[in-house]
Each structure stands twice: as C-alpha cells, then as structure tokens.
Length: 306
Image 1 (cartoon, rainbow, N blue to C red):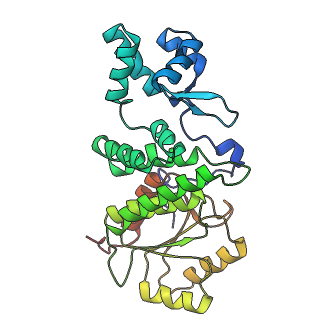
Image 2: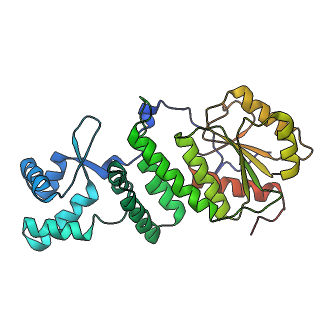
Image 3: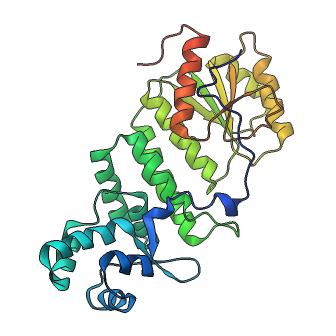
C-alpha cells in the first residue's frame, strides 16, 4: 500500500552525532560580544554585571566560553530603555523573567540541574503552546543540545531522564484501551537514546489523538510475538531505534507481515534502510503522528479509540 507522500518521507541518511548535536536554534544563544553589542555596553561591563548582580547569567559552552540567552538580553535591553539606569533595569528584567518559555531557557535550567525551574518553564510554555508544540519546540531541542559525540555526559543523562519522566507521566494520564490496539511500537532504543525520547513523544501524541497504543522491544521471542500480534490485532506496527541488528528487525517485520490480516509497517527515525519495502515516517514526532493518523484512516474503517 502506498501512503500519502505529504507526510511519509524517506528517512534521511543518518548524520554523525557531531553534526546533529545542536538542534537548538543558534540564534537563541549568543556570545558575550553579541550580547554587549545589543545592550550598547562593553564586554567588561557585561561581565561586571554578572559578578555584581548575577544577571544576565550566561551558561558555558563546551569550550568554556560564555553564552547568553538572547531573550534574556532582549528583556534587559527593553528594561534599560524604560529605566535609563543599569541597576534598575537589571532588577526589572530579572523580575519580569526572560520572556516566553523557550528551548534556550530550558537549557539553562537543565544546566543548573534546576528541576523546579524546568517544571515552571514547561508550564509557562503550555500556557502559550499546545502540548505537542511544547515538546517539539522546547523540550526535545533542549535535551538534544546536550547530546555529545563523545558519549553521554552527566548533563545529558539528567536532561534525558527529566524529559523522559515528564513525557511518561503525561502518557500515563492518557490511558490506552485494553484488548485490541491501533498501533504497536517496537522500540529498539536504549535508555538515554534521543530516539527513545522521540518514541515516547510519538506515543503520547498518538494517545492524545485517540489512538490506542502498546509497546514492545525486539527482544520478544518469536513464537510469543506471533501470539501477541494475534491477540492485539494492531492496525499498524512502528519500528524505531537503532540498537538492534537489521536481522532482528527484519524478523519482526516478517512475523508481522505473516499475519492473516497484516497491519501497516512503518519506520520512525530511520531504523530500516530506505531500500526496504517499509514506509518511512518523518523524524518529527508530530509530523509522524499526523502521517500515522492519515494511514490508519485510509487503511481501515475501524473507529479510533475515544
């Protein structure tokens, strides 16, 4: 079956982690020189404000250089225009906050291991954005900012764990119906994989759209897998993650397609090579959700879970 090309796309070739690392918009974080230029002060003055007032407060790049949140600097610039006094402007800007919740601000909170502040930022974002946009525009880019090609850092693992706990808690609040399910996910990722976080986001988005879901790993023994598939009768199977061999994933796909009424088989985030006869979902959880909904409606008249 050929699915709509508007949402189902070939998975892009996997780039090295070093080239995928910074998913946070680089315009959200600026250098000391750029921050000083925006404020119309010298870099020495900016650093003296940091020492004296603790604001604006930079984070450090991997090379140890200061990086300022652009929205925080812009908030300070506006306050300076209103007060014409540095100390008053700093007090005003720090009380007002740095503007709407953003990935850059969440990066700062996670860098400080400040979970209450991270919670507040996500709550602020939910007041302005849908949950789906909050996940895609704030949470996922902030966690991905810490991904490193040299292996997980303490900052990345803590940020990943925070994000996974947050998404999992929300997923549990949207119960999936018992018995037959609409979508079964085979998650071939491991803890601290960004793929796992994206898979959790996709499952949350699907449940919120009324799609009942279940999740297994590729470790399931083949005979038990067949029984589970017969009992669950999924309308679609999604494979995701990159921690299992292609042979293992191929075995799962073969077992799924051996069912009397074979469900759709979809690949999320490039687990299966493009040459395989499997429809590829775009790497964005929200775009992938929309594609799955479209495919389910086209493939079967079964009503989605309420």
